[in-house]
Length: 205
Image 1 (spheres, helix red, strand yellow):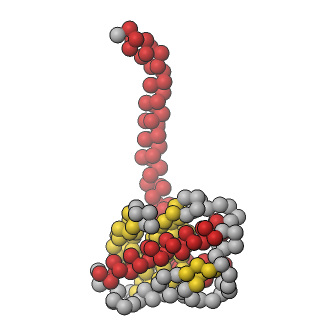
Image 2: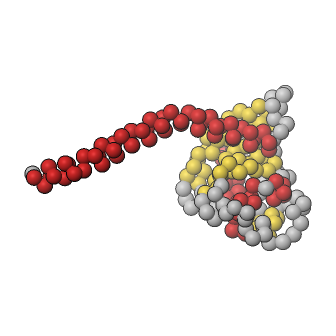
Image 3: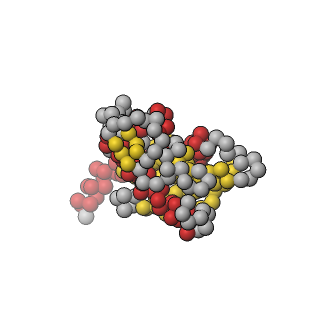
C-alpha cells in the first residue's frame, strides 16, 4: 500500500493535468465541430458549383458506400445538379483513395447521363508541394473535363488539350497523377453501378 500511496503522491499533478487537458480538448471539439462541418459543406458546394456552373441547385439523392483500392469503405454523398427548370444537368459525388503522402479526396462531376466527366476538384490533399500538389492546378485538371466517364489511362507524354481517355501525367509527379487516375477508375465505376442499380441512370449510359 505504501508504494501505491507514494505513486499517487508523486503523480497526482500529472493525472490532474491530463484530465484537465482532455476535458479542454473535448470542450473545444464540441464548440468547433459545427463550424468545421459548416465549412466542409460550404467547400463541397462551392466545388460542385465550379464543376457544374449551370446548376441552379444541388439536390442530395443518396449516400453510397464506396470501397477504396485499399479495401476501406467511405461514404460518398451523391448530388443531382438541377437547372432553373428542375432538369438534371449533371451529377456530383465524392471520391477518395491513397495518394503519395496521404489520402486524396475529390469531388467529381459527370454529365446527366454519366457519359462524360465534367471535371473534379480537390477537397483534401497532402501531396508534395511544387510536385504532387500540382493535381490541384486547373491546367492539369482541365484534361478530365469532357473525357469519357469510363476507365482512364495514364500516359507519360502527350497533349493535355486532347479530350479522351488518356491522361497525361504531371512531370515530376507521376505517383500523384497515377493516384488520381487510379482512385477515379475505382470510385467512378462503383458510383455508376450503384446509380444504375437504383434506377437513377439507365444501363448502358
